[in-house]
Image 1: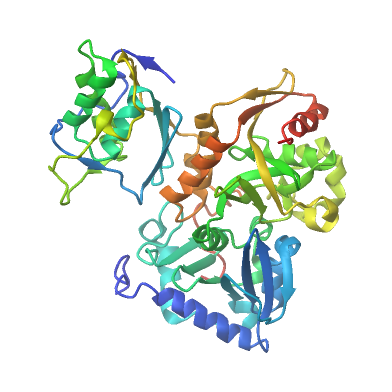
Image 2: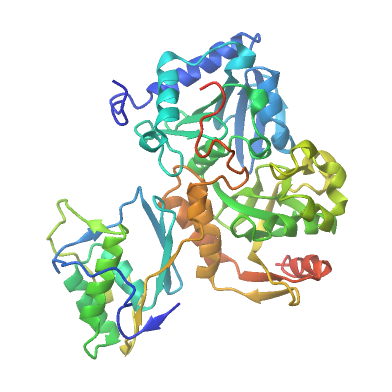
Amino acid sequence: MTEKDAPSPGSPRALPLDPTTRFRVPSRRVAADVVDDEVVIVDLASGSYFTTEGAGCDVWRLLASGASVDETVAVLRTRYVDTGAVESYVHTLTAVVVERGLLEPAHDDTDGAPVDLGPAAGVLAPVGEPRPFAAADLVDFDDMKGLLLIDPVHEVDDRGWPHAGPGL
Amino acid sequence: MLVPGSEDREPTAVHDLMLAGAIRAGTRFGGPLDRRYRFGPQTVRLRFAGPEVADALGPALDHVRIADGPTDGPTDVTIDCWDSVSSGEPVSPLVALLLDRIDHDWLAWLTPRHEVRGFDNDRVATAFEPWSGILSTYDRTTARGAWWTQDATAVPSHERAAPLRSLLGWALGELGLQSVHAAAVGRTDGGVLLAGPGGSGKSSTALRGLADGLGHLADDYCLISTVGPPTAHSLYAVAKLDGPADLERLPEFGASVTNPERTGSEKLVIDVGRDFPDRVVTSFPIRAVVVPQVRAGAPTALAPMSSAAALRALGPTTMLQLPGAGSTAFRHMGDLVRAVPCFTLYLGPDAAAVTPLLESLLRP
């Protein structure tokens, strides 16, 4: 996992974000789970999967729970010592995950309504003293994409992929 | 006009037609071959329309076959399987039209995981395997499934080695048994799951264990339960090797290859249930998740792995191969790696070191 103090220069260009917008996980396309302090996210449409840890995992959990960007920034400032990088980091990471299609704006009754984030966001384990902030990238993996294009066992024949079975 | 999404008003239409076709096909044989199989605590009834279909799908499941005939025993799931060539029963015109549309414009009709757009919904799961020409449908409300292909004698080796994978994944997933892409070896009192993508060394590690006396639960796909102590359950009693080079490293299995005529075009399939029946294990508590990694020139060794890294090795490859698998499936895998220790198994040139390392993990 690569960590650095600024958003990755290789990340997609940050899109303008309304900091009050809430998001949700597009459940038919994306599956995610948090293990320890790391989230693993699978894009079932593209075959890519992603991971981020630490502050990045916190951002994912908050956004996926319905927090807005502003609310996410506010919660992170209770968990990390903010020397001025938190807001920019949250905006950039949010733009990246939205641009990748891992989160989508929530256009329903909860859109715009405050979310009860509870102490330290509720979805996050409580911390004692705020920790030093370290930006964590969203790391992507492409090594499984072939599963969506070639069979894991049977190789493509000379007709190319896909080709329906005999008699169709 | 049949276009993707137009049939949402009739979510069970294709499934109903598939079941009706299966029943007619079975009638042409004087009734289907009716068999029951046990996967962990669940019983699945498979009804094969004719011997060709039974021969294509049955052998890999024989180790969990518990009864034949239309008994009155409890059944959690029923799946009807048929083909058109051996039964003489064609698919209905609507299904034929759908297959024709898929054949001509697969991008419009199939998702990347082969779900059939518009016919795959919250009630009915529908998938088409374009390489094999296999259509599968499952109604979650009635726990009824249907499997069809044009010619059962043409079912390729990899489907015979892992038959009904989508259907069993859907049906047993509804009952709390999650299908995962992993090998599994050990003993009835404990074993390990071998996770990782194709080519990572799962199969050769599992076969090395089998050759050295370990029990064999799975080569590529198995079921896990994470309610209570994590447990693995067998799906198929077969193993696969990439080709002759693997067989040179594991010569014990040369006589057990069931498809030697396909060397070079398909993986080599080994019938573990037929040739090593006393080594087949159908269930065991999972003691660890192990991720093999080939490391030429370095010693064979175990090293602790983070739970998240293990989830990366187990989760995506499973999710991307199993139509319909979603957040619940992924959470089952997360629950597993949270509950048991996880290791990297570095595979060096010392193959004899593999099994003792695995055995060191089997004790509670």
